Picture 1 (tube, rainbow, N blue to C red):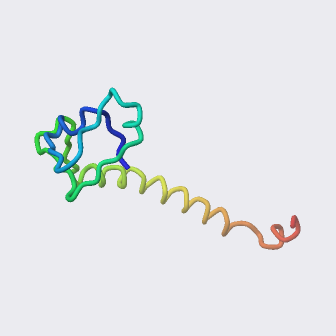
Picture 2: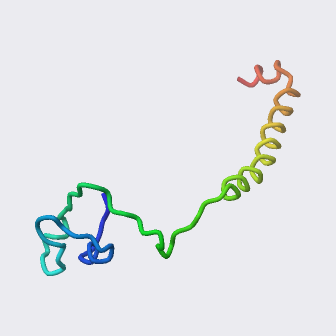
Length: 91
């Protein structure tokens, strides 16, 4: 559910088929809902709209891959060098 204020319909230039817009004068409108026949359109000139390219996902993956490989590799090597009898003796 999307929380909105009394200017929501005016901001997105939406019209109502029946009923009225939210009003800041009515306290009960804080819990009111609007039922839509179709989803509200997303404006293409939205101020905070960004394009997510491949770099946004690829760069963190490439930065974390060596850290993961070094961590897993070092723990694997450490586990293979431990004498199993020493590990069982402490349990």
